[in-house]
Length: 92
Image 1 (cartoon, one colour):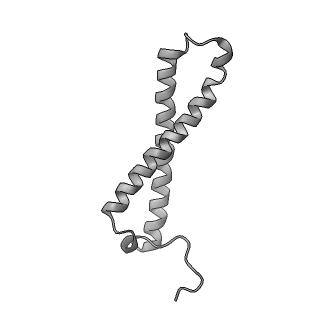
Image 2 (tube, helix red, strand yellow; image 1 turned 90 degrees about the vertical axis):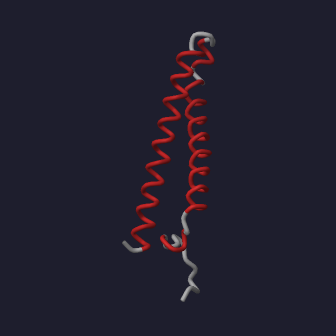
Image 3 (cartoon, helix red, strand yellow; image 1 turned 90 degrees about the horizontal axis):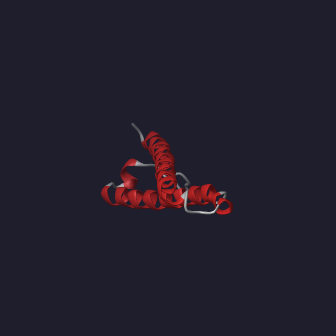
């Protein structure tokens, strides 16, 4: 496999990982909300719970994604296996 294919597969895998983590965080937060908070909140504030849970799931997935990418960067020499996505025009 060449560097361009490695880069494409890495981006595809990282995107899939990020989407799965977001869905898992959303479902986990929804379960916590349904078990603990749903019945104790007034009806007016229950309408705001889904957007807040969705935003919280995105934030949590972003934190997990950044942490896992930083771990991967420390373990793997990125220049050896991956081609830069954006290259300068003066590159020869």
